[in-house]
Image (cartoon, rainbow, N blue to C red; front, side, top):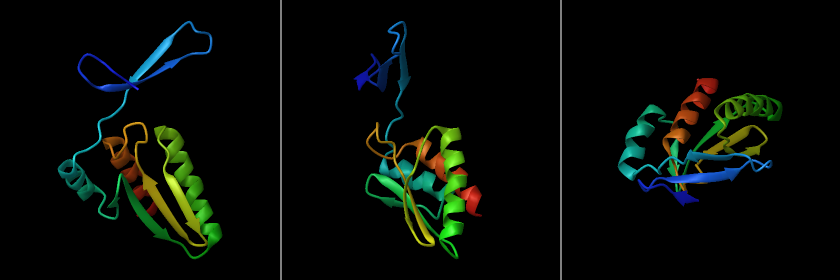
Length: 119
């Protein structure tokens, strides 16, 4: 992790050919106040340390796995993947931006999209 002159963190990658260097900004971790304000958009999600989480109940394992397949499509589309815990018919989704070290706006945006799969 590096910082640009403005002090924003970014990840630094080099393509295997060595011909190009890619840089992209890493989002800032939300303040507690901003996180609480943004979570009003996704009221089923709760602050859980350095992540946000939501649990969803299904009638059985197959339904839970079908839901996770839909979650995977959203995650791939967003390029942002939740941590998942599945127990028979219960799925717990957890979002954090690991590179930033906490919850960012990207996590809240993905939470909104995942809520659309449920509601």
